[in-house]
Image 1 (tube, rainbow over the protein chains, first blue to last red):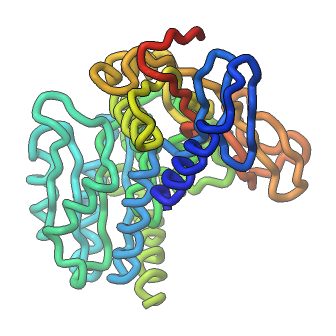
Image 2: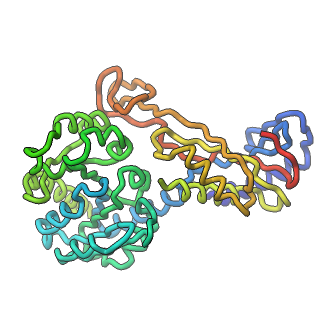
Length: 264
Length: 122
């Protein structure tokens, strides 16, 4: 589609090139999208999203996941919020009833994959670079990683994104939903500092609540900050260590997976 | 944080947008729109862009960035307003159900090309 436009632009361009020589006038023809500026430069309309390569790939992933009835959840957080422990415990509860696979993104090491593989779920580790690489997982990386998974035998694909509250929110990977994990050892105002992340996610997990008695953390303030960015966002207060509060989170997740399977 | 990747993507799209058979031309300017909610830092992007254009038809090109505000529309009372601080609730009826009309953009609007060896101002 883009090529069509490019060729069209190119034809028109030559037409204009041979007929218009008004270096002192700014001539614009709205039908061609080409403007000749006073300086003699020609402005060519492009109107293309910079990330559209990623978006097209994400749509393709989404199509494949729909065809195979795989529910895909993109889990994001800052480093150290307890994503991996939360997922370890989650896997222990939902496997083998919900056939789950995991894609783990880290800049470096296979530590997280080793921990998650204990559950028996197939795990694909993605290292964005050995010495400090990409800050997020992009759609083409997910496409490659799913090549090693038997999607026909999977109900749920969990993508543990690179620990980062900024960039992963910007990249669609073809997921069905996004959740963000934050913990009570971080600042209460994290949501307002990273609005896009909290805006883009469907639900939040507030982790490490077992530590609350030992901290000066104002939980209500944190919840207010979340709802300032995303009013009505469901927040699951959990402790990945003690599994306190896991019930509602697991129910929510199971209902989502079931919904997709039922749509088969 | 991933501004270099974005800069390389811009160079690729701009290069592909030069009409074929147009001879020795170079891209003098790239006009870009960035929404305030796009998690892209214009200064970092300009820095990366200046590095990414080396040895391409964009060498020396200027990156003109228009920053777009975050505009939302309430799904309940249809009020439309510009979100200035990080608060996403309807100014008028306090509803939390809203649609982001603009602010997520990261779009190349146009490129400006000139013949090789022509001095370009601006």
